[in-house]
Amino acid sequence: MLDPRNSIQLGRFGNWVEPKQFTFASGKTVVIDTCTLRFKKWEGEPIFNNYGGKGVVDWEGEPTFAELAVVRLIGHAGFGGVWVDTFHRKFHQSMSAFLTALGKEAKARLDAQEGDVPEHLREMYTRIVSANAGRSGFWDVMARKSDNYVFIELKRNSNAYKDRFQKSEKRWLEAAMGIATQFLSFVVCEWDFE
Image (cartoon, rainbow, N blue to C red; front, side):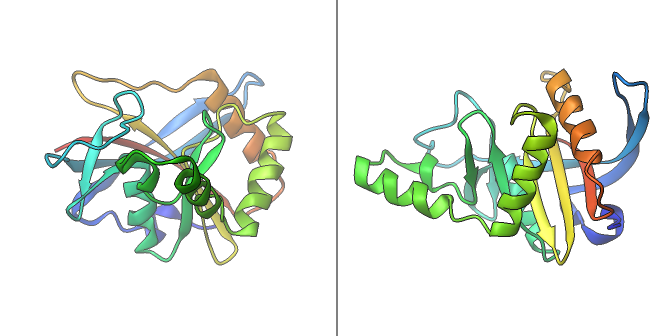
């Protein structure tokens, strides 16, 4: 099994911290690797669609959401991944859909492009959705490197804003861990602005 602490270098963005402990309804307890990340807040031109007030971070001079910043961060370690937007039933690999207003044709082209997710990620997504009896609670980032998959749940954590785990996210974790494979790893990422 992949050890995220040795495979994903957080660099100037954060640190690995004390793992989180989860107890499932079944009584089983697991420990999940946890990191903290700090991103620079986007101070440039406002983006067209901030998803109802999501924080926008500055990733190398470009506006992005924290989920996509994490996809890029782990991309430096050789992982290919996507932001799993469970609410809108989409996979995102870029901010294209959020930066400007799109006409119907441009939106359709972009949806097709964003939906062009590698088959191995789609297959793993389908397996976990089946094991969980639905999409509810699917973690934010899904990525793969060789035969190893990593799933990352982002939680914004600051003095003013405390994002908590939902029951559906814990159920999803238990279902995902129930898939008989040693190639799945899970990470909780607590993030905020610098």
